[in-house]
Image 1 (cartoon, rainbow, N blue to C red):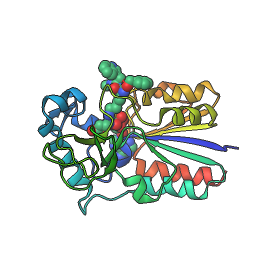
Image 2 (cartoon, rainbow, N blue to C red):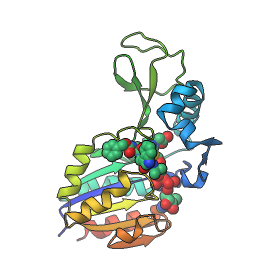
Image 3 (tube, protein in one colour):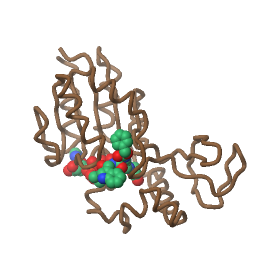
Image 4 (cartoon, protein in one colour):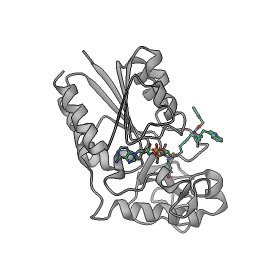
Amino acid sequence: MVSKVVILTGAGVSAESGIQTFRAADGLWHNHRIEEVASPEGFTKDPALVHQFYNDRRRQLLSADINENAAHVALAKLEQHFAGEVLLVTQNIDDLHERAGSTQLVHMHGELLKKRCLGCEQITAVTDDLSVESVCEYCNSTAQLRPHIVWFGEMPLQMPRIEKALLQCDLFVSIGTSGNVYPAAGYVQLAAGNGAETLELNLEASATNSLFDQCRLGLASKLVPEWVEELLSQ
Ligand code: BV8
């Protein structure tokens, strides 16, 4: 009987909602090298380019044609009806899990709809474009606002909470991630190390596929609802 589940999602869970995954970009992501636009060095070197990169993705996310899909909805249903505990850890910066209704949710790589001021450290919502001219509504400083997103080389968010859940869970499920980026890609080992059962739901075998007890290949919009129904009827 499963009582504590930790779920890790990646870009593959939002792919069927129309949001491009990283792998699909094959390293060139919206025509940019990932390091240029998703690293603190890249932001220091060309803040306008990085702001534009995230402004484009924010506009896309907020456009009418991007909506949560059956996988997001099924995960929210699991949280709602599961008798035990569910923690959803996502590498994604979109808000589609929230739109589907998930609340026990950690955005370990930050959120596209939040900004952070380098002057006063305040984290606030953002839906419009950011630029080097943007002014912080708290400390009034200019050119100090950045997306509240974890870039390569930066510390992911809420790691103690995630690691505690991984060490206590009895089931770890990875959905729609290629298993290339750490520390997220190492979570299967942390969970397995404490005796949890591990399951991968993905379109193709991830880089860490061999570390999972079970693997089901296919579209998240099909695999996730099926798996959630199975777990709820356990
Ligand atoms: C850290 C936000 C230290 C940005 C992201 C050298 C210098 C510095 C660091 C490192 C280094 N070498 C290694 C590192 C560590 C580095 C790392 O892992 N690099 C990799 C490239 C080797 N990691 C970091 O820098 C992290 N920080 O290490 O700090 C530390 C470490 C431990 C403890 C304390 C401190 C920070 C990494 C965060 C970077 N930010 N995102 C943004 O979004 O713009 S990463 C970003 O890329 C995502 O968040 C995600 O994590 C990753 C992409 O992975 P996926 O989500 O898996 O997406 P991908 O496209 O790759 O795969 C999609 C999968 O879905 C595929 O398998 C596909 O088959 C499948 N799929 C597609 N469609 C579907 C589907 N599945 C089902 N259904 C479908 N329809």
